[in-house]
Length: 224
Image (cartoon, rainbow, N blue to C red; front, side):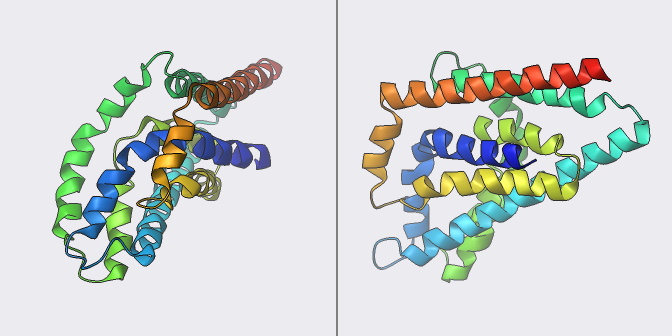
């Protein structure tokens, strides 16, 4: 489990370049109605809400899958799901490296849900108080994202609601360095994460982790 948490954190850290594409827009939204530039408190509260949303969905998915696996008494259930999760890591590696954008198909699946959630987020604007950035971030945490969906497959095979929440929280913490720089040094960080060398290193790292976990899961599956 510790290795999975480290992996989830690393995925968030290395893949945050994808999140940076939305940073400028989020900074603008948080700035609506603010007399000065976006305060640091708003950025922190926004990310707090985002992390809460990740932990919640991770808990729901992790607990649900663990319950189904337990009720079905199918010993191979989590091993099979872990193989699927490893496959998502491979897709994510191709996505981060910009070798193939097949993961965008998965992102589109969440568009219908986001269309129902986004109006609630828009109703919070302009933010009347810095504390409003927390529910705003919570709602924006449901924005369709292949990076989030890929990590969510790991939360699904964590074996418990607590494990699922921890996995998604670790991922969210990995994205914080990039997201906390919204409106400040975001451009420099985005340039670094969009560089060919960084992208390839990040993609290869995720690919190796996904292939290793997939191999390990196949061995566990065969052993059972």
